[in-house]
Image (cartoon, rainbow, N blue to C red; front, top):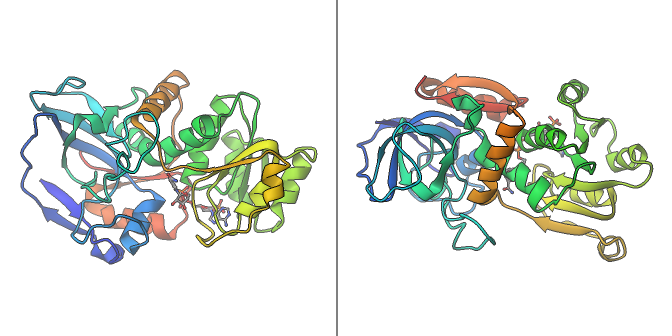
Length: 339
Ligand SMILES: NC(=O)c1ccc[n+]([C@@H]2O[C@H](COP(=O)([O-])OP(=O)(O)OC[C@H]3O[C@@H](n4cnc5c(N)ncnc54)[C@H](OP(=O)(O)O)[C@@H]3O)[C@@H](O)[C@H]2O)c1
């Protein structure tokens, strides 16, 4: 089988195509013919050595993927040959409360991931793919999609009609935008570029703010919500955006902390805003398999399609990484593997 390997911390140039022997199939295992994979911000962090739990040896990268089951171990009960499946972010986190044990391993970081023609893994680490999506679209759900779902509807507990603030037009925000609109939420989104804000409006965004032209963008958010603020913020910015996000949050609202696009340093937080304003602040990491299954049902019922930027061939995986790292894609960058 053909697979890519990357040496964590050695940069994008360490991505190499290689030939590996097929792994033996465990009793609870699935053998997949991989159809597609997709890139996430964390995959660049892995390459740059900025992610926790990195391995000293080369690993097959990426967690987003979609494959067809070609062989099942004798103990497998949830899948049959021919099923189309996608990985869960943490194969050990099936349901319930998060724990260090459940999140000890993620595909493409501690264990081999999806950028390969053949993948072997425990059946518990996979769910069926959504019927309404093609392979590359289905491959985009398990990281940014699952995180957006958890942030909006699990940690964020958003109800129809809630006002949600999305920061920038990256993968998590665009996934959240399409999910939020399907759920009847009101979406306010920021971007550094008016052209991207226009595209967000076409996708259903209700209000937009250019954070480059308006460095005090939280003031615009307050103005656009009649001085009240939003019910929920999906905080992907970190160090330089989190204090502003808190100011843009309504009394009783929530900030779900997801990422560190603007920096990962410590942040001064107003305890008064949390206590007197009864605001809550919570961090999340991806989500459980149950959350992913809920997301898949929601995607099917509502005919949701992820925003796609570019599809690269397996042979051109290095170009996919370059495009993702350098060109600020609008939507997911996918790699088709067996088309
Ligand atoms: N906790 C989790 O489980 C989890 C899961 C997925 C991702 N993450 C993290 O969440 C963050 C976002 O991930 P992603 O995949 O959406 O990243 P991404 O696709 O790489 O996001 C890129 C976009 O971020 C926006 N951006 C950059 N700096 C910004 C700033 N200071 N303020 C507002 N927007 C800014 C830009 O939007 P414009 O071009 O519109 O300006 C840019 O196009 C990353 O830090 C990632 O590591 C965490």
